Length: 109
Image 1 (cartoon, rainbow, N blue to C red):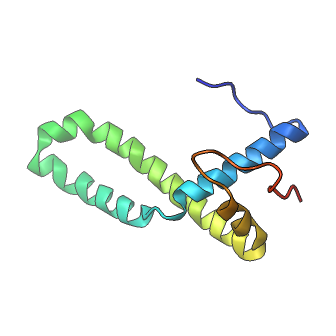
Image 2: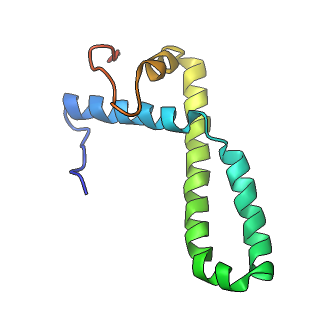
């Protein structure tokens, strides 16, 4: 596991901020409401239709569902933040999720 980035220095704070914006970029186009709804349906139907599958993967599905709900909370918080500070959305668009961001393009304000 990579070393944890701490936000107790200027560099660490900036890296943490950049990673949060990257997370927003990854999640921006994901239909988590649809995913959560589908998982809820599977949680209801799978134990009846395929109890063996449910016994093997039910716990993992519930944990993934928790992650999806957390991701949806993140999406909502990001949307609210971008309404208040539109420049954040512009910064997100400048960042490439596969290579990170160019620190020279990142506004630290």
